[in-house]
Length: 112
Image (tube, rainbow, N blue to C red; front, top):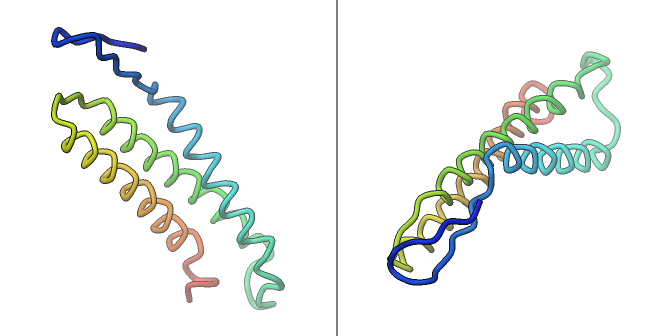
């Protein structure tokens, strides 16, 4: 969706939240899959299906982080510093959500 404001010919491209959430979930899935493939052998005392938990939790956290990023990017402002600040807060929020999802998904195994 492209919108134009009354202050000139400036256009703002807004990412639909569903597309952003899908991109965040795919990013989370790729990151945790890469980590799990490179992690090596698991402890034999862990459950046989222990890898399923991070494969569900991390993409969900990535989708939530991307939704936060999309919501922040939808806020419009004429101030360039505010736009930049919102962009940085959105990126930091996405990274923190992926990190917290990884910790929650790997709790009891690698984060034990």
